Length: 197
Image (tube, rainbow, N blue to C red; front, side, top):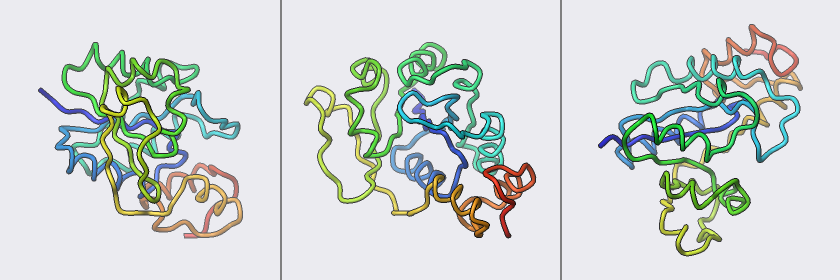
């Protein structure tokens, strides 16, 4: 039975921290592949200046093209509207036989009980939580906590928010994101000013 990771996010833009997290998940959990899924419109965070989903998918394809286990999925983009994890996992469960592993950060786990149908989410997939600092036990009922796997990864203090801020300030983001992604976002003038190489 295949083991498939699901890595959803805005990826605005994708950066090396995302790629390292995904590679750790593939290696440690023995995943056959991991699906990078750019959310159309995230339900759990405000993102008024989000780059168009087609740009974000293009950047994901550039960032993942050399890793055969990394697959970019259009599922969320093609569905349109708000993105809900439970809907995505339901679709994958119907169309892709195998065991699903859903990656999320420790900060997202704190809000997990308020997500749409959290009980159904953990029935469909194991939660793979990446700590963002000192690891703490998840604040979840025991029946949900049993479906959580902790995945410590090397700490890479890069964020999409900081990349966008630096670009707007005219600062370099070289080595923060793959060169192909940097060339793409520069060529398309994403996030404001053109960045220095």
